[in-house]
Image (cartoon, rainbow, N blue to C red; front, top):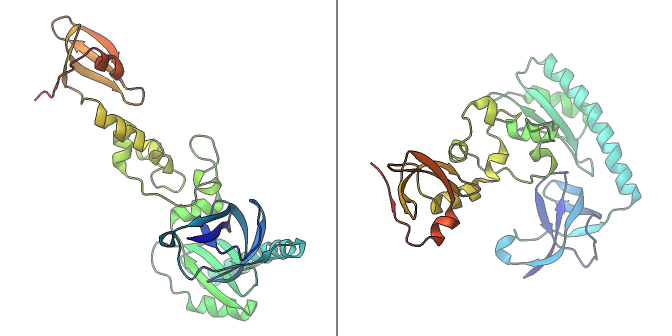
Length: 275
């Protein structure tokens, strides 16, 4: 078992584990840590806890110190410098006629590197751009191509629901979302209805998917025949989340509603799928 704290470097970024290095660090405190990118400034979002070796990547990097007011001032200065770097890079992109869209710019805490995030439809030859940027900023330059979901996460915005985007507010990682999830939830398959600002399927389709899958395993399919105390009924409607079935009683030409629990309480419930 290893003692770790969970540190996040962006508001809705991925959480990384670090060795607390003997420090008592409360949740919400800012720390200076060593990462593969160099020295970074992050926020502790998971208090000290023990994890198995399989849950971490060894060797575990350590917390260097708890951040002070000077460190926070450096972060603000880096943000201002990144804004200026964005404008410079944008001018160079136009100058070199590159088919790419600059999304964001980030300085590492120690200013050892400037990272330029961009989107593009294909590969971009930015070698001359890197040379120009290196000559201007006199530090290491990294151009990183990202996808449209990452772009939405960085830029933020308001989703079709009227709330701020999940990816930019609390989702640390993107989870796979499939069209099958929309079908299982009986949603319209119109792309404009089930797509987010990024143009991909909305992340929230994943939220209720497990509940739908669990309910579908319990409930009969549409068209199944069920024996009830009121007679034999054909399933003509399903409310999966509330587990309510609409049954058309054979020979009575009327539709009744039952909850799945009510049917189970009636005793032997036989289900036969119709052809």
